[in-house]
Image (tube, rainbow, N blue to C red; front, side, top):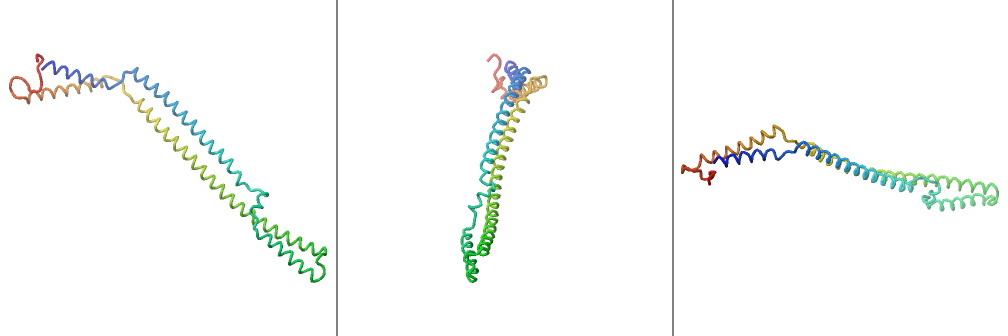
Length: 216
């Protein structure tokens, strides 16, 4: 029985110590972990900067279509302006024709004034509609760009947390010391106690039923 007990005791002790690193092993593991962390973080930062930069470049390019410009007002002019111009011509001609002055200077000036007023009102209306549409489009573009950059930020934060956890796990590895030896010894002593209990609980035939002697 003594051989089995000693073997169990030694095995438990060695097993307790074997789960820990030596100081040199721990130092190397921590060095490798720091290098890996720095490499992973630098790669994540580079990806974050590149992706957000592309999002901003795309915003700058797409935002040009929402810039107000006088030469774009024509696309927003109300088609009814042509009808209003024709009605102005008709009203002016009717007014001055009655007095025989349809082709007079006053007739031409009156017609010009009416047409200018119509054009001014139509331009202001068209510019207002264009400005409203551009502001809405620009706001939507800003929102989508912000959402895209928020997504990149979330991705970076998630990676940073994961890499940080990996680094903390590596830096937290313990080296073998006296306390660890005692812990391993305690495991061996516990195993020894199990052997003794098994011996005591076996039938009294002179030999335990589950533990062999050193001779056997």
